[in-house]
Image 1 (cartoon, rainbow, N blue to C red):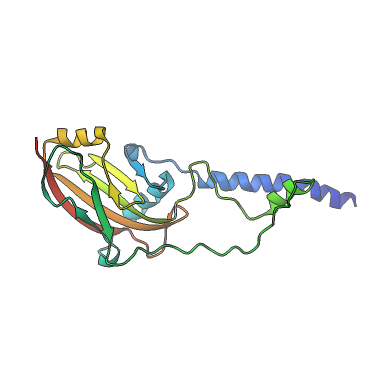
Image 2: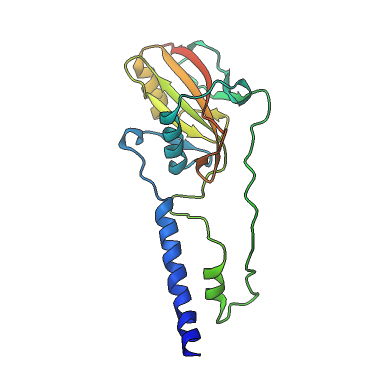
Length: 212
């Protein structure tokens, strides 16, 4: 009886240690070279690290059905005002959305918290880490504005299919006084990770200038 009681008392400690390890595993440090990246939609810094790692391992694949392609504005000269909205679409079909893994079991929470409620929460399936926000699942686009002298003039990771630069970012583009190339790269994620056969996919490259 004493042995069973001792094991019962150790369960919360063991479970807490497991959660601590899981949370630590989910934490990542964004390389200093990417401190300038702008996040839009529901993207996360963990997703950025996963994408950068994937690009380092292999060049983005040329898969038209998955490639993000700029719709507007068209290449050429853009007026200084108003600030344009850049929009694009992904391939000719809707982007694939990873299917969430099935839940093998679930501990239902009681209507009222009792003595065993904290223990029930500890032995239930692992919870998602929220230290850096909700893990990202879906299709994201890596949007890079560059010039010959500045390859990272502005960089955005977004889960949407449009981007309107904030005034400070647009002012930086205007101040470049050089042709600007907009490069799009897409990828499909599940819980901050690029899924198998989910890219990265090389998208369109468009060059424009900004008139005074």
